Length: 484
Image (cartoon, rainbow, N blue to C red):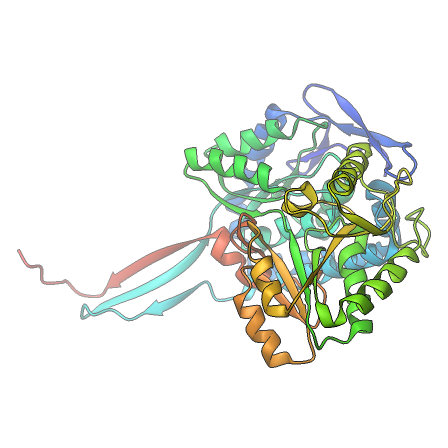
């Protein structure tokens, strides 16, 4: 992983402007290498190449498309050690989450391979004698994919695999924090697997210049769909601009995810689940538990054991297999975490674990008694911080959880599964896990949220609903009698 360039029309290219920026390691701060600093002109070039490639890729035989994805899965699996090193170097991703990402991406590719042979339509009954009616799904054309840094391999893969497998072409904009593992790496793998030039294009950009690429995607009539994974404020701005162009967009945004520990929960299991769900990849996963509601009968026991567990989590170099908590992504993120914890403590919150920055890391931190008007209580804090709130019952926890404007994922820990399922049905989120923590995803599942967490669903099994057009075709073998 040295220089990162654009991948446009099957070729590696510098930015038209010739500009670059430094890709830095969040752990050491060392420069990994230069990255092409693209702008709207680079994006328009990529879009044109994607448009040109669409006719060939969309008409490719299903066996050819399937072979590309199966080969890509094998290539990625074979490169596992180097990919894990790159994830640690570029994004501070430790071994546990790195393995999760590679496993997810390999499974994603193998499941995408079967989309080539999925039925593309159905025969519909018609009340008009002699009429045959069909509902047929067609690939839409060029898809713009905007992916984040926090699970760079998995989420960039998710952004491109479904659209490509359905016969679309893609322009991918990775985060400036993960231009290689979220962008160029995918181009390398799919090119080696036999994906034709122009089917996937990757355009990178300097910090603060994402809008140039996104605006070019939004404005281009060639781009038929956009998918975005990121923050709610950015997603809202994209949705507003997409509305001007009547352009459909899939949004997977922020999560203020609740974990409910019921009165009858196995406390030891709840502690293990909560620690994993809150602090995997130092809390920098949209699915991480942000709010833990624990029923009063087990609250004291849970909090004592949870705090002890959290204090013992190893913090340090993500390249060390023993590390659980690595660095946060950059200095801005570290400063934000420090500021929000200080604000909460000044307002009356109590720190029971962590709370003192250890640059470039922030230790796993647990707070209680967090006032409702603080930033920690109101929105997503993307880092290794979780709040614990004691409630009288799991039913009260559901009511409190539903007050949030965000609704991605929740979990319920209880020995009474039928009751937990009833609680799950009341939670205003897109995903609920009973007797598990919040960080779960599989390529075939309908991943997405409700309320201000966005709209639409990712998932190989649901890709056709987002990245294909449904066309009604009717045909008659004989003339029809008209009313006049």
